[in-house]
Image 1 (cartoon, rainbow, N blue to C red):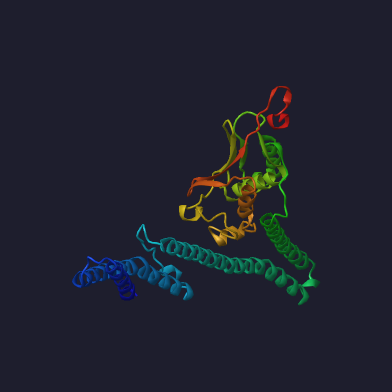
Image 2 (image 1 turned 30 degrees about the horizontal axis):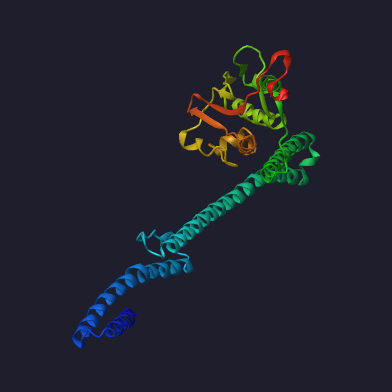
Length: 348
């Protein structure tokens, strides 16, 4: 192509010069040679470095796209004046985006497999337990009143645990799919905490755990969904009591700033090792699977906490030292009380 174009340019140049009578034949040959050489070199350089090499890069990228070798695609540097530079960059951006999508799909697939395995295991435990008790009764133990009552209570407990697990799964699913809508209003976290402590008084007394709210009684107003934050606090306080040592303390405190209120739920329990802290909000993740099951729970409480706080544009955080206890905290927007008992949000 460079030869043909150079030949055409040289012929045109020579024909143009032949129109002048003062130009002799030898000058025409010299002009032809110079114009041919210069044109050939310039056209060859332009075609080779600005077009064909860039086209070769594009073909290589397209080949890797067809073979789905997206992870092996490296970003190519192009000259600033290259007319194909934009196309090359667009193809690379497309490949990079597709690779991210593939990586995300792989993560989701791994999560799906792990979730199905966890659900199967969690459902199997109470079902098999209840099934064993019922079959034992059918095999003749039903005639012994003492054994019958004992086994029926155990079967009922297993089925209650199964019902709790299913309810938690439904709650989590409804939150994720948006079927549960948040109803935001002004709520008093201090009063809410007192109500939750009343629910757990008996459970705390059995382990001689002290329940306390730091600071003097006062209104701690936030803008949130009362029912869902009640669920968050219930799960966190229940976990704190469950994992605290006998004779310990579960304490709730509030850090109040101009715009937000941070709620802290602290316990004096076994604590959480650093390698587990990043994963405790995952579904069914248990720090110590055997001990966690002995203490009850579905393994979904903290996952529900995470999703509810996501709906409040907040997140749960944890600070923990093994053997010394843990502190879970979350932040909500503050509502400032005005004179006359009215709140700032109500006035607006």
